[in-house]
Image (cartoon, rainbow over all chains, first blue to last red; front, top):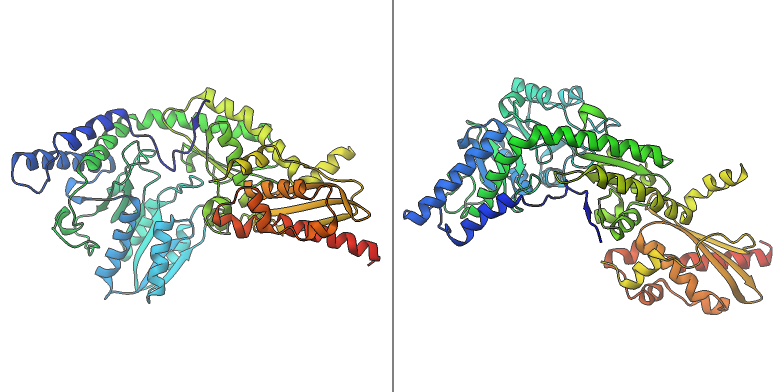
Length: 395
Length: 124
């Protein structure tokens, strides 16, 4: 059976060049970078090359990069580490309603432990208002955390403006850039960010690796104490093969980004327009054009439920994701869609397709051919579709 | 995550649709939680002659609806009333734990449809 992978915001395949390079560091150059001998030195050298590659992709200096086990750890280190370091300055924290759970849950944990939290709402396109952030700032605000681009609907946030605001007020500014890395050019200096989370497995690198950019002069308290690796910011023997793979993936995507983005934008618009043309009662979730990531398609298909859509697509070998409750592990649908003002029943019927490097027009056309049949079948089963059906039959 | 039997009932659901001459209709769930099941019964004497369903929901919601219609067709009301949600799940070879409470409501819809039939008979 043919398989079409359209879930690149969940994870990506590892680039073969990256995988091949990593393998060397498992089987041949396996030294511990902290060791003095030649084995250690060659690993250390490769580790530092990876640091340089990651730094280059985001316009940072290598000294500002701390490797971690991934996006979740970087978010936790940024938030908990800042709060611990700034405790005496204040206890007010600001974030947005559409953050990844790694950010939201960390803030909620802090709120339960005596901190005060303001969660900024978003508009119908899932974009945060700079004005709302400005109004939320208090004299005791110590941290603002806003994601660069949303993982569910691809909405790109006004990071430069919020960064300026944070800088003016002397507040630490953290940005989760897991979804935007490799999709839109990032320069930490221009964005005025103090801390930035990035992850490897969304950019054709291995899973279990990420980094936190920590601007020179910004102090955070580490979560993991031990052997003083990563300049004491993150103790523990480095995941050398993973980090080296991440570095290589950064280098490769840096070269390919412009072309890939251009192609994916075309593919995305062909896909979204195709869905709107072929299926009735569909709503696009999130912004269109420049404010949306090139690889994100998110639609709500009325009168049907997301997991049923996913199962039906999966039977045809098509991989996507949904914001329905059934896929979130809770009884509520996606917090992002709800924050955008979608009612539950529309949020339950959401589908996200996230494009990647190897997707083709032909694949998209195949999905556009199959999806209407799936929707028809499920709608014929749905009691919510009765009204539409009966009015059609009456005509 | 789903058994083969669940996938079979999801892919080829039995008894989908409405019954124009239904004399008992039951609905459970709501759009907010993501599952709505509606069961139509055609009862003659004490026997369920025909049954159909319409469901909005996940794979488990569709499969349990389909399964319950298969289990009650030709059965008496008394027999249908003892069918539980757990029995429907069991007949499907089990459901993932997370689905047991939220999407496993087909027997409830069936019982509501029988209740509706009885109320109609009593002229309530």
